[in-house]
Figure (cartoon, rainbow, N blue to C red):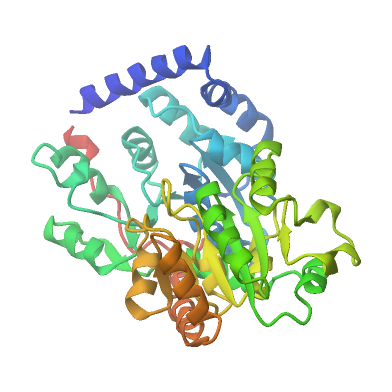
Length: 420
């Protein structure tokens, strides 16, 4: 299996090279992996001790971010190396100030993994959620470097638990500790003899709790909602979401609607304008006077959504009529109910919020109207949503207790690779 895996990695590398001739994302990945060692040679401080965090992409980074930032707050002298596999993570966060070095991760070939680990020589390594790279794990084991998995989720259909997955499953035993999000993951691992595991929850709750505390005051938003009793904020919306929202606005002109689209390019803003008949104000063109002339504000800039939610009575989360909903917790943290489309099943927090009455799924306009009408009159659902976020914070602190450089690792890397 080891030989098959390594062969597969080389083949995958060849596919990336071919794809890079035609695809911009693949080109960035190939160049980033190629140049990673040169970047590290220039930036690594030889006598410093680094904690290495690896995230596949942006979503995984957001789950590791609270841990990185808490470590930095508690121990400012710690050096953080952050690596990404995907351009969608690296390109967005390459200037993130919480890490000392940010790089692509070279392909998981035996030679590259050894070179990377020898060059960085991290004091500890942290892989976020779904990241399990056999050759990197082997290189870390060879240098007796403690390694952890955080915010992990396991399901029975993953390769680790198939009849042919013993080799992959045994990889999990090489982690000093695996921090999982839920009880089902822990039970699944324990049933397969993996005991170095504990439930700590999802670090994203800590992240949104911090965002809630750090929410910016936004003068234009405050001016727009001033005096309004009913405010709906639609976050990361797509055109199907916007069609429903605009229809509700036209039939309920007494509300104020803030739309923060998932895409803010010219074509999408034009589509929204057509739905609204041009009767709205773009955030980029707002002033204290024209904000009083409309009941719809379209935010055509990035970086404000998590703070804008605080001005809502109800939040609508986009994406539920497409590939899946966006972040519900960023809204729920403010103690407001959340509404979203039908495609939410793969998001545990959405399922949880629906089960306890803090969130609601809609499939058409009739259901949306009924939910909005009810939620704009009674905030009990919002209180439930806020308590849900509050009650699920704390994962970061539990992880820090284990991975902090001030604390020795409790477990030991199992001698799995010597048998391969």
